[in-house]
Image (tube, rainbow, N blue to C red; front, top):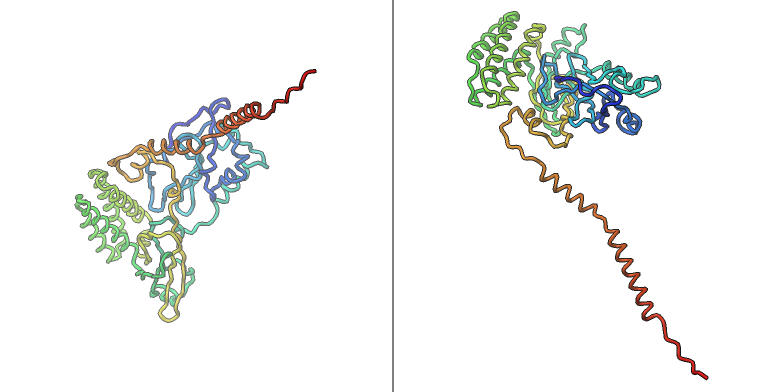
Length: 395
């Protein structure tokens, strides 16, 4: 996320903020700020922090750089991120938006306190192994390289069996399976280029004029296995897409522009990395739309199943956030401000009136009624509750 100037003075006598226990993810390094331990950690005050703009789309430096995830938020009105994580390459980057020292907070750093617990959790979080591509969000493609599971000293028969195996992918919510055909990585990239060109035309936009021509040139170069020339062609394709993004109007078709930008990054990544990877055979399923576990099974015609790989596609954690979004948040999410935004004030007032009616108190009226009945009982008792004694005759 893009950061702004520090918020707060850092003075112990100035305003302070706390971590919002409801915003802390259970799998994050700040688990001590949630649950029963939050009774103690909620006393920690943060006098300053660096605010981050979560509504601006982060820069994607490579195809492997996934969007950042907010692990915890401050209690300020903007719910600013306190800690964010972003997978990068084979590791992960953690960003703390306050100081590690006590300059901006009063978090005790004694060996028996919660600060040491968070530091240990941070170390474990950064060093634990991650299976790239096996667990991702819904919609991210499933990719499996055919030769990844083979050891370095695999025999030629093992390699041949892996390359000739058929593949079936089972979906999490259906017993049905779909067959996947192994293709070279370059073929998958070329297929994505054609899909983007078709999407641009369906949106009634003018596609880059040299895109088809350069794609055909790259395909002919790949057929001759001239991989250095293929790499140069991929860079030209990325440049054509970048020039098209500058000249066209992104508001007309934000989804198409997002797909074109993702393709441009993939082209640059493929051109700058090991070009031999373009000739590797891989299985690819473009868009898994269901959350759950996908079963990929490799089958040999004579021996049956020879390999099974499980892929998890998890729903976006933001789907559980039920707060009322602002107009800026919606515009950042859908990529355009051409929509009508209705202020939720009427609903809030109605809910407030309902809540007020539910909490109306009647004890004062009950007390008044009881006093009236008591007074009435006394009056009636004095009026009808005694008898006049007969007069005694005088002598």
